[in-house]
Length: 227
Picture 1 (tube, one colour):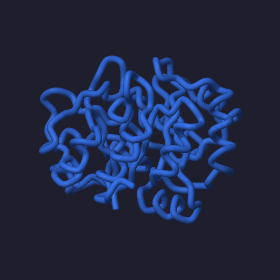
Picture 2 (tube, rainbow, N blue to C red):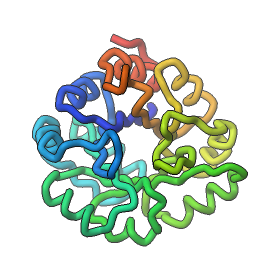
Picture 3 (spheres, rainbow, N blue to C red):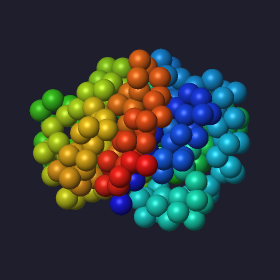
């Protein structure tokens, strides 16, 4: 069943909605971005979800196993163009389960993070599946977050060629992101067959997380009826 991450949560109740709807992971942004979370709220989300889940290896099998054993969504901190010292300072304050590097960081940085790592691979214009796979192979001990390139970082609500993503999925698992919403995620999953999907603005109304959209997105991604 498709792994689902609800990203850029900025309130405890949003994390609660994602958990009750069956999210596998919840993302909080610590980068300099409009959806950056307040540190006090981030700590409150951690308390609400429960103690940190120890994930010893950055691969999809281990992450799925530990998520099932924990019985709670994994808490992912999203960083972009930040130093290891900045990341460590956040980890000292918020006991994150995983770290996501979304700013085109050098693969070597992933090896210095004391958490399982999700690393963004940005699909740029003109890239083919072989080029994407070469970039994925640069950081073998990470889980790939496949998203369209943008100057701001992240998908910014834009999608990219899903047929390209489907080619990549035949060789390597990844989280698919960019332009997904409750109306198109089932089609994306069917065409691409990704390991997982990630959404942010696609489950918002006027820039705020929407409980019904979160519920509908997760149900559609997992091929279930929304309750």
